[in-house]
Amino acid sequence: MLHKIWLGFFVVGFISALCQWLLAGDAEVFQRMVTASFDMASLSVELSIGLVGVLSFWLGIAALGEASGLMAKLANGLSPLFTRLMPGVPKGHPAISSMTLNLSANALGLDNAATPLGLKAMQDLQTLNATPDTASNAQILFLVLNTSSVTLFPVTVLLYRAQLGRRILRWCLSLFYWQPAVQPWSVYC
Image 1: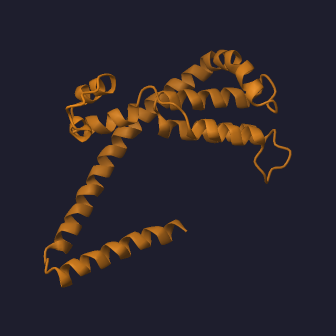
Image 2: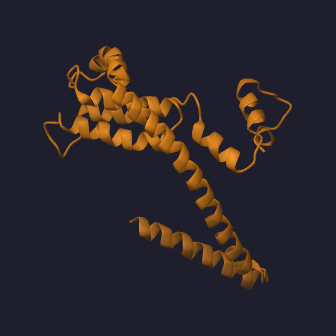
Image 3: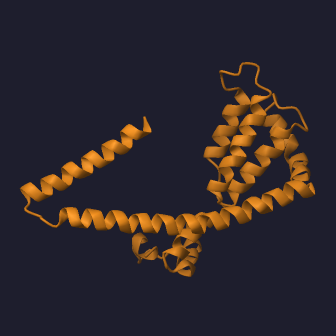
């Protein structure tokens, strides 16, 4: 299915360029498309390399927290909350620590690093599921909590802005001090 969507993007782009060339007389449109494609490919590689470093760092921190027992202590502290929210998950089950790791990564704004942690939590919750072909109430609730998580520190956004050479300090200050006279889009540029 996804390959059809990507093919659709390319076909629509080609038809749009063809219309600009034939109807509007813009002979440079294909040259601009090729240049933009290579520029964006280069930018995506730069962003990916930077993201790998940050995600590796935070996944390492999460692994240290898990190996040191900090996550188990945090899971024990949050266990009363999770057992009330999800009565089907017994106290001390590995799913609770997996959910704690995932929600902690989401709170830190590490959305990409939270993905494997969320998958692990779903696998742990699946072990408790009586009907494997249907999601349990605990899995649905975890999915809702995961997708609606609150981000306290948008680390990924800050990384993107740093790599693109934007003024991060001004952006961070704009989070705490709104200037109505300034247009919202000019604060982020």
